Image (cartoon, rainbow, N blue to C red; front, side):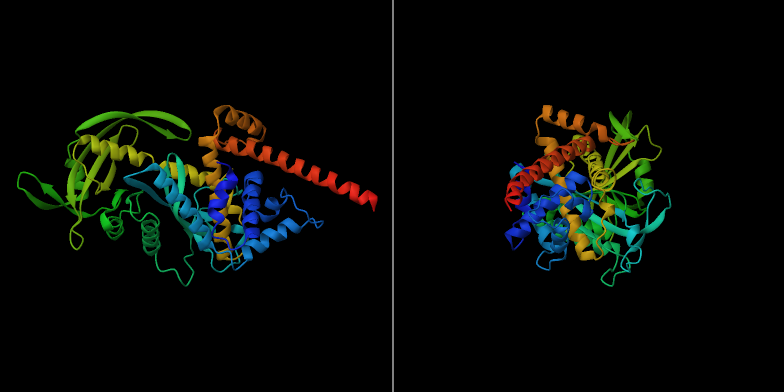
Length: 423
């Protein structure tokens, strides 16, 4: 399926065919210039107007148009997600929930921006840990290797509508359940999503959770000999849990692949009142790391193989970090958005997500010889430290699109030249 077809699936919520064409131009501009800046997006868009700034004005009007809403664009992306999930015929849909801080230093005067924590800023020439920007939250399911969005939202700690981070997480869970209604959802989250109220909400309506336990808490462990629940701390119970099996696994850190031995065990626990939520604790010790990995889940575990399968599924969670890096760093540079209002930024963020989705889809659907050619074409643009996979594919695709737009402008000039000479 062509990239234009994916744009049409999302743009069906737009009320005007002209707006749908502008959305297509915006997506192609982002993929070509690898930037969400309106001026760069418009620099390659062919236009029949004699005014050189006409494409930029067209894009600015698109994002300021009241008939184009961020909710409408997200709904188009959600419809694509439901179509992907339906085609995969999944019984349980794994959804990764995660957050990211987006730096936005060029609009420091905007009152709604927040002070965020930023460990590294690869595109900005500073290393400060606190900067201006906005936190964002996303829920993504990978269907056949393709990231499908169920929720994305940027918010501000200083906005009057902001209540708490837990409220934003609850909103993400409720929206995901609405988008994937009729399916069993397995929420997969890193530490920070193991709050009792949060995982209880994840388990609502027969859904499941698989989250990394971080907070030290009091639990109730199942005592098979006494056939009763006994109160214990999570730390004490994890330390005494027998590790029933071991296997090898590879870990990638700083682009280095290392092999480690993983010892794993599991046990039945229950959250104390008022939740009384029965679940399982999976404990895994990897030889490369000092601290063990604790996973809380209410997914059914009937044997040791089920626990191992859940551990491997949690290992797939870093895919969303690869997606965030593509959006943030030397990929689509989403942090360089320079629209001033939150509503317009949400619209632009939805368009950037659509561009990332199309690129990810191309990596999985294009024939291997074409991908090799595109990566070789984009190799000259490779920057220091850039990944040799998805980034080079993006660079090569950008070169190819620029050549296509140059040919369009050349044909347009050749058509207009005879008319001007006759005059």
